[in-house]
Length: 184
Image 1 (cartoon, rainbow, N blue to C red):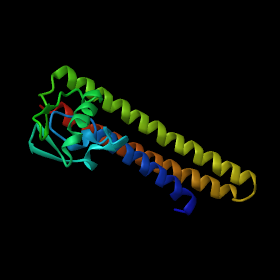
Image 2 (image 1 turned 90 degrees about the vertical axis):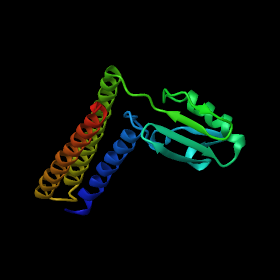
Image 3 (image 1 turned 60 degrees about the vertical axis):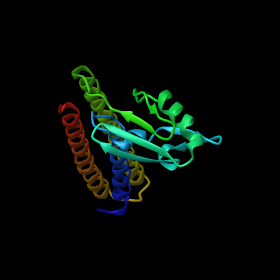
Image 4 (image 1 turned 90 degrees about the horizontal axis):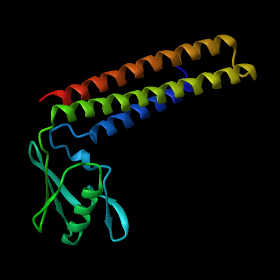
């Protein structure tokens, strides 16, 4: 594969990584510290990730403990969790915050599975957009005389193979995450 096609493969890989990080923030019945990744705490006027102001641990399957390094941030952490879309009420005992994850109801599992499929579909659209951009670029290059028609066809075929490969990987990731969510 030539350098031209590889730059678009890199973009497709980034789309897949982005999808994986989004899936990490979806809570699936078990405590996963990655659900806190998107939450920012007001730390002396600066929005800061929780992991940078506290020690986050998972002592049990359905419990996350947040032990701030500076006790003055307890209220700010608690407020950030309450205002997030996490849907869990934090328990503050004065020295640490505990998040207890309740068992997911069947209805909530189905909602989460639907959300996973939606995010997967958005990733596929992003990959197809990358393919479209790549194909437009090869056509422009061919019209400008920078590459031959055979090179254009070869590049388009390579890009199509990449697109199919990454869409397959998105489908696999969606299937794995859906299975994880639906497992009681």
